[in-house]
Length: 309
Image 1 (cartoon, one colour):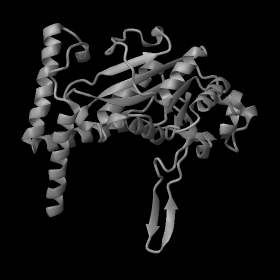
Image 2 (cartoon, helix red, strand yellow):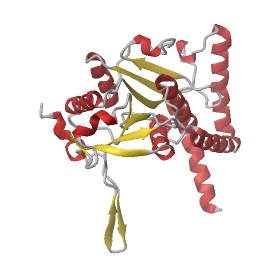
Image 3 (cartoon, one colour):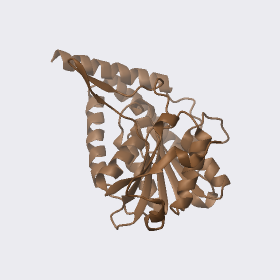
């Protein structure tokens, strides 16, 4: 393996001699990933940077980590010249909560290459800054209605970190993500790490779903003890929810799908006295394709009506 420290560099105002005074006990990882239903992770990370004082303390060499042709950055062509380029970046921020307690936030696209080296580089930063707990959040699509409390699948390197957790799954094989691999390797190295996957309704998986980001941020607050500002995100989620309700009221088909999910959800909870719907048989629930097709058709109709008006 090439030297992991050559993957990142500290900013000009952050020298290695300053690491002791820049210590932080929590690292939040928000590196895109294989899936992020409802844009849960992105909404939460954007909110943290907007609502709290922060500065960049280190950056990673994305030229070594990204496949530009696999996900091409955006450029703007203005009449007869190129005017801008959306330069991808992978940055480590030092953020301060409402009480002045610092934490770290790693934000950017998930690496396409050199996962093992990137994991080692991140682990070295965890040690250098004295991080005691690494946390990740993302959304996963599930056959649940948005009108009921959102479930969360928790996982960690030690059961004590997620005490009271009621697992939704048994043993399954899933495609890997960088954040998942980082959690695994941190645990093997003796570091604490946890993750939360918020259950996002299938039919909202490709849209921004503020409620999922709120639930994710609340889990971060509970797990870390950080005093994080959540007010603006809650307000955004309320507007988002109102728009979803408005669109549902205009479509009998979508309303019927959501009501079917509600009935299934309530029946399982009442009949089996379980807090977690997913501990039961979901074979009767509409599939992701069925729900997605209904919602996509509805959104297409809405767009066409707006264009005609």
